[in-house]
Structure formats: structure tokens, C-alpha cells
Amino acid sequence: MKRNETLFIGFMLFSMFFGAGNLIFPPLLGVQSGTSYWLAMAGFIVTGVGLPVLVIAAVSVVDGGIQAIGNRVHPLFSTIFTVIVYLCIGPFLAIPRNANVAYEMGVRPFLSGSARHSSLSLLLFSFVFFLLVYLVSLNPDKMSKYLGRWITPVLLAAMVILCAVGFFRLMGRPFQAPSAGYQSVPFFKGFINGYSTMDALASLAFGIVILTAVKHRGVHDKKQLTAYTLKAGLIAGLILALVYLALGFIGAKMASAGTFQNGTDILTAMSALLFGEAGKALLGFIFMLACFTTVVGLTTACGQYFSELMPRFSYHQIVIAVSLVGFTLSNLGLNFILKFSVPFLEMAYPVTIVLVVLTFFHHLFNGSKKVYACTLLFAGVFAVIEGLEGFGVPLGYVQTFAQSLPLASAGLEWVVPALFGAAVGIALSKWGPHTEPQPAVNPKVTNDSL
Image (cartoon, rainbow, N blue to C red):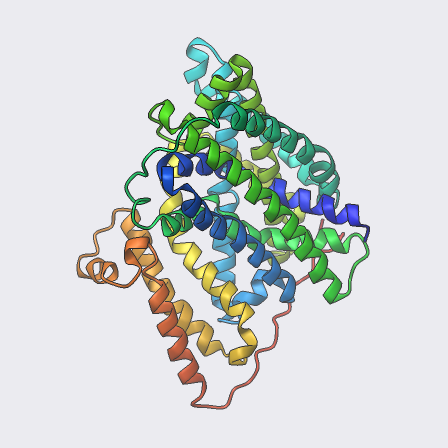
């Protein structure tokens, strides 16, 4: 495969990652972390960049991707976990969130009077948005052309203009004092906030899309597939890290300009300060492109997975279903969508992190299912406790115990239970004969299914 093709696939992966959350959360982190910015951003990059790249690497190493990784615990767990991940990064959460943010930033500011507050305008916008998503998603083997060669360079050029002018105009402003949470443990606070990008979960799905794109270019050797996929992941990760650093730095410099509720407010104020009315158009353009490319990537990933899981439904039928569900939920409003995102991520991310870490240490414990099961059980229980707390469910003494664990103040109370579970699993695996688990057969995506 040619070097420029690897570059374009890396661009494609970046554009699939780079959606609403990737734009909103880094500047908010910058405003809130202040003088602790560099430590906080380091933690954010670990989970917002490093973890997604590790997931891409894990998916490329294990035949069958996320399904096979989950089978190392149990086939039932694998199916349930994979379906939940795809539904939440797809039509039930990430897709409607991106579509709604695209409307809020790309269309709504330019409406006047009652139209700005009319649900009809959102309905019309989302109809056109998802129609375009459907049309582009029909040919996933051409996504590197659509996203990598055309859309991503334009998106990056717009981002460079925004960030370069921001650096030049805001350089003299001092960092402010950090807010609560960033004063004592800024690294871990940034680490947790990196969950909000949802990119590690998306990587579980995007890994197969990237592998498919590489295969369509005639690469079928296992080592070469892994190498090219990892290179594409590193390219996307590097660009993401640079964008996060720039947006976070600008956010930190904007802290003295006023009080902001979220990253959208910060970017809106910054664009107006730097470019006036033209800044509103530039920012809207960036959000529209970023959200569109992410939704296309997620729709394609869902289409490929569910058409293989349920062969009686074609890829095209799944894409239609995902687009319709995303269209419907996006019209419920952004606040409704965001209400459920953080608690869900607090439950899903620890399980994902444990699975990926165990994948890379697989051979050290001979791939024992007992190690996988015990580690995930102990980590999962406390991740669920954290998530339920986020949903406002009272847990009494259980919650009190969880908060007494090491790292609980940093939102990582599941780490010590996970280590304990791994130790229990290793001990149990030594009590009886061990049989190396065979990789589960996962149907490959073929041109016929697309």
C-alpha cells in the first residue's frame, strides 16, 4: 500500500473521531484548569488520544476485533457488551448528539426571530443532515476518498486558521487560578474528562472500518494489516493531540474574558472576539464538518457490525435504520441527550480500559478466561456504582464504601478492585488445567454484505 494511502486512511480515522465532544471539551478543560492546564491536558490526552490508539491496535492484533476480544471473557458477555457499545456510540447517543450540536452551532445562530426557537428548523436540518449521511455511508470502501482526501483537509485548514489567530491574539493573557477539582488532582481530573470524547468506545467500532479500508487496498497479511492499521491510528492520534493542545490552550487564555457554561460558549466567544461575525460562520463550518464526518463513521461502523450480527438484514437496511433512529432522537434536544452521556461513560470506560490492557498482557497469563472474568467483574461492579451515582440513584453504604477506596477522589475507584480481581483470576487459573482459548470466528465484512 502506498504511503499516501496510509496518510489518507489516518486522515479518515481522525475525521471519524473528531466530532462535537472533541471540539467542546478541550477548551472547557483549559478554562477550568487554568495554571494546572498542562497536567490536566496530559491526563486528557491519555484517555482522549492514547487509549483510542491502543484500542485500534488491540482490534488489529486480535482476529475478529471487539467480538473476539469480548469472547475471551464469555461469548454472551461479548455479544451484550458489543451491542451496547455500538448502540450507544451509534444511534442512541453519539450520533444524535453530533447531529444536534451541528444544528446548534452551524444553523441556529444564523436564524432570526421565532425560527431560532422553532423545532421545525431542527426537523428540516436533521432530515437533510441524515439524508447526506445515508448517501455517503452507502459506500464505506470509498470513505477514505470522501473523508480522507476531501473533507478532512478542509476541516484541518479551518482549524489551523482558528487556532493560529487565537494563539497570536491571546498569547499575552495570563492563565487563571484552577477551579475545584483541578487544584489537587489535575491529571486525574483531565483523565476522567477524556472519557467524554467517547473515542475509546468508538475505536472498538472504527478499528474494523480501518481494517476493511486497508484490506480493500490489497493488504491481507496479518502483520501488514496490523502495521498499516496502527500507522493510521498514530496519524489520527497525533493530529487529535495537536488539536486538543491548541483548543485547550486557547480556552485557558479565554478564562479571563468572562464566565462560560460549556465549551460551545467558549468557542463562540473566542470566534466572535477574533473574527467578529465572520467567526460565527467559521465556527459553524468547523462544527458542521466535524459532526458530519463523525456521524458518517459511526453509521458505517454500525452498518458493518449489525449486518454481520444479523445476516438477514443487509448493510444498506442497517444504515437506513441507524439514520432513522438518529434522526428521531436528535429532534429530542441536546440537553436530553447529554443527560445520560456522562454516567454511561463512567460505566463503560473502565470495562473498555480493562479489556484493552488485558489484551496486551494476554500471553503473560496464558489467556485464562478466569483472569478476564474476575478482573472485569470487580472493575465492572464499581464502574456501575459510579454510573448509578451519576444517574442520581441512592446506594447508601455501597456508595460510601466505594468512595473510601484508593483513587476514589479522582473518579478511579475501580482500579484497585480490578487489580484485586486480576490477582484472584490468576490464583484460580493455577488450580486446574488450562486450555488456551481459541479465537472466536467473527464474520468478515465482504463486498456482498455492503
